[in-house]
Length: 217
Length: 217
DNA sequence: GTTTGTGAACCGTTTCACAGCA
DNA sequence: TGCTGTGAAACGGTTCACAAAC
Image 1: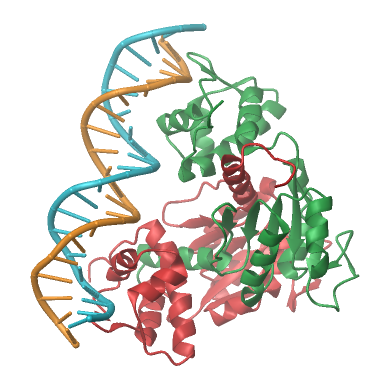
Image 2: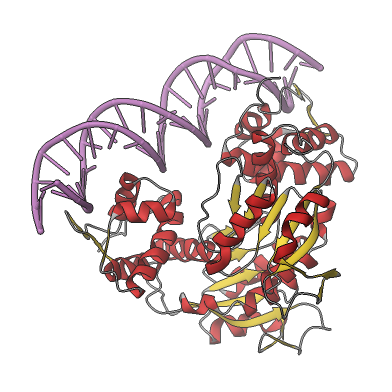
């Protein structure tokens, strides 16, 4: 098994949607799902869906569709969610608390294992059932709790420093909620979730469609 | 002025970064910023930056760079942030509260003007300084408070319904935090912020780089 | 000398179209 | 007949390279 196929970024994003859809339909008792059905759910063409799913191998049956359960397993396999991903959350502010309280992530194979914060006033408090730990405990937490992912939910100014600490502690990937581009070693992939940027993109899209904010049509 | 240049999606995302960078440097007293400097901040090549900024017109000076203040204005102009974008937030759960408390958005020209929720137990309570309003007040709120953007921060199951209500109420764009693809009229653009999907993309990237979760070293 | 603006080549993704299988 | 898998064509975005401007 020399190397898994690399998955293009746009495809990776859609796989996430297919996973949801297949899981939902499987849960509803549907055995097979066609590329057209997936396309409707993901906003993609059926051809696109087939191309995307081809990275998983040939697990569709002509004339029938894709096995719902099989798809779930296959996509989870590619994503690497055979078991669980354990994450450490740095930052017990608004975003951090919201994430920690978002229990549904656990259903998808992601689990927050610990919360850390730099502020002494927060350390020791209980947030979403976790005792907030000091930053100094990061290396121990990552090692002892088999943490794979670090989540950055701190203000922009502190983000790079936290990223460095996470990499040093040995996490294998970083999810970044701070509006700041991170410099990290190539071997540690990072994904940004930036809703300020999202808002701006939205504003731009709105402006493109309706140049003048008219009073009311 | 028949039509503004349409901005490719990847470019739109980077414009957001350039905006931040230009604003920061302008604030620090720097007058001109070169494409190389922007590139370093955004993780893009200098050529890429120039191509991106070309959608704003020719506002760079050869041999000198881009005027920092001018860039801020130009990007804000394209995004449509001359004045303020006012948003209504639907859903006073974890994510909703985090967003409502995230005051820095206001500095960037985005302002949450009202919070609504469906649950009677939440309506009337105060969240981040807002009295939570019932869903029935949506049309009034949008009209009377000149709301441009609707923000969906409700569970997946309710997302489409809320989207329909927002469109009916007259919002011009939707920012969606629910992990659900929305069906909305073409004239109302939508942008998704989906951190579950982001986590999965991250997990996939990690898996691709290190197929086997080895013990250590 | 430095840096922009931009056509042209390049590359990856999407769409198309259809052969092959159920 | 219905639906998948997949080469081939089409598309869009990125990189390259350089003339023009400071």
